[in-house]
Length: 65
Image (cartoon, rainbow, N blue to C red; front, top):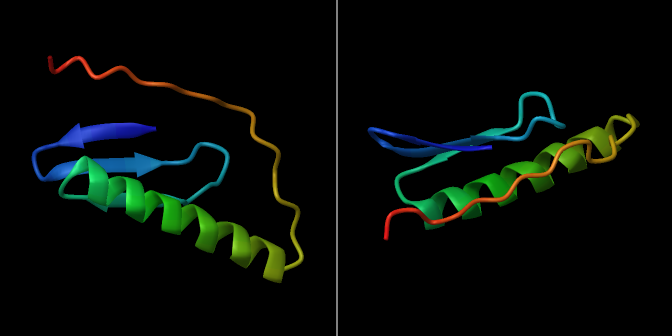
């Protein structure tokens, strides 16, 4: 889930509790949330915990035009 803020953008992953990221631009946010997801999943695997299957999906439309 991506949200705009006064400082840029923030994102969280509903299926991965605590997996969040921010970025000053959408491109920076995309890089940061991708890295956060990889790190979160790596930690779950290292801890021996199950990786949950995706239970949500989302899309977006650029309505700034």
